[in-house]
Length: 511
Image 1 (cartoon, helix red, strand yellow):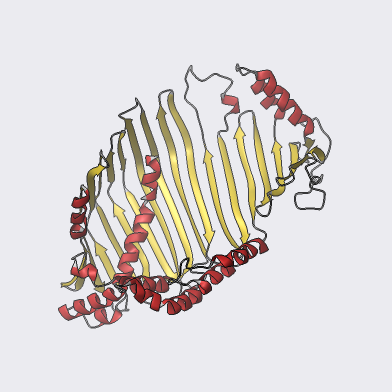
Image 2: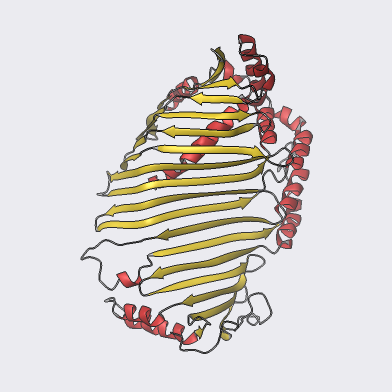
């Protein structure tokens, strides 16, 4: 969906890209220490070429020149974009200039008043496409060579607009005021801690179909985002970029792979933890039936680096869901629609450090495949050793008629085995709402619900509770100790992972 494309270009993401480029540019401390001069600019250029290669300067993509008491670092993609004409694409990207002024404490003040303006147009196969983005922006920050990044950096944009067109649809999107901030501090072992925040007002996106009569409008009063990465080995990352950029022949990198493997191993886990959240507030989606509204919608992600107990998790939350007031939506639907909900899932239990080290140790770019197939059993053994599993943290969906919650844990290999606890409030109200539904085969649905209710036990808080134990390999399933399917090898027993427990109360006919 086009909304996701906008989110991929979130203020925080653009800030991270631009600040990384600037960090690499300003890593030459001697050039600044000698004062602003043409010789200093040349030294800075030579130093930067060690990271990104001399081709950036030879093609005019990057240039550095003294300008008053600062160095002007200019990014100009025109020469590169001109090469796209051969592929039937016309593109432009307005140059961006940064002014870097040395401070007395060894840091550097960096500013830019360059707006962000770019557009692409052409054909993909025989289908034309076009995209245009405009954002009048300013930025200012302080670069600290001691941590190889910015201690503070802020970007503000008065607005942003995006227009996209292809044979199937026309998309227009805009935002009001945008603010993005970055902070950096020293980590351990030469690493750096980086955090970002971003916000934008008045997000609007219109999608108009050409081949189908479809019109969708999505709007949000505000958009916020935040991100954090702990102990990123940024210096090592920049060093690897430099080695790749300055190797004109792949054989050069193959010759250096022992050095690369040694440095990469020393830099593990590359980072400790990475997390980020994006949130839309006061969301409205215009549909042919009327507006669908949300008070807020957020998406969070977190992942570790290559550590012994690696994990990856996602967290989705929403509230204030309201359906359109339309004759096409029956009155019995509203009590069953969850106005708020959340789901929190995490994959964990993998020794990614050991797996990564085994891969690095046995990697040989001169061979095909670079990692021997004979190592597959070792990788599987390492993967299994940590007992990888998926954990569902308490997740709840609440409707006017009642709420349904779930939490549990499931092994991933060698089989999907585990336990999930499901609970519900106001079960009789939920049944009454279903009973009021004017739908075909309603009786079958009610019989199914009655069976589910009969399997429930009453929890300490009065909720209806179902402890579901399962083993996908044997097809064993039990609910609150009642075996529904014994499976080919017998069901999960008490005391095993996923074994049933009655510690939340007992009895049936839960309400």
